[in-house]
Image (cartoon, rainbow, N blue to C red; front, side, top):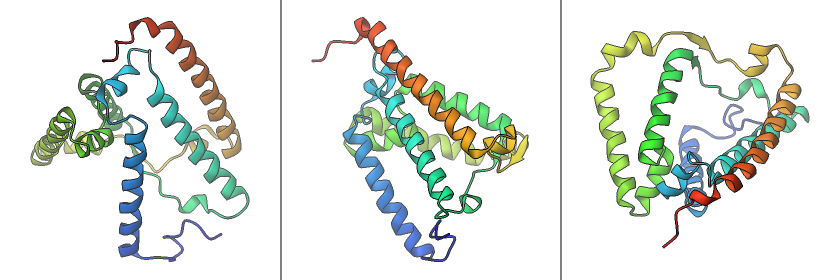
Length: 200
């Protein structure tokens, strides 16, 4: 085993921040190149006529999943050392719904709003300002929601742990789900192509 590199002491905190910064810049660049700095393109997935966001993000998830899995199979990555965010079921469901509503209404998620703002889009800048204000309000009123925020804690769990299935079977099922999703996306884009707004 030789990865994750940070956990094996191949670099320290300072270098990890540099790596994170470079990775973040690269991620933002490719998001912008894929058109994810446009609120119209992002919101289009909810209307069904352009599911590029769904296809790109699902492809990224599948690529990362397969990469991690096969690197662990050949003994290069120790999956037990890969960080998994703790699950707080009910607050994360509520947060996901809130983010989803904001995504539909505003056309951006937090990451894509940063991409839009960095390219000078006014809607992206306003959206990002709203995020900052929301963070400040949440921080100041945290004591009111602290109990809910820390409720339904399940620890750092994974699908294999929850279902009792092997990692390999989970990977296979997610790949099947992705293929089905891509087929559905192609069908949806054709079905609702007539509502695509005119470009101009």
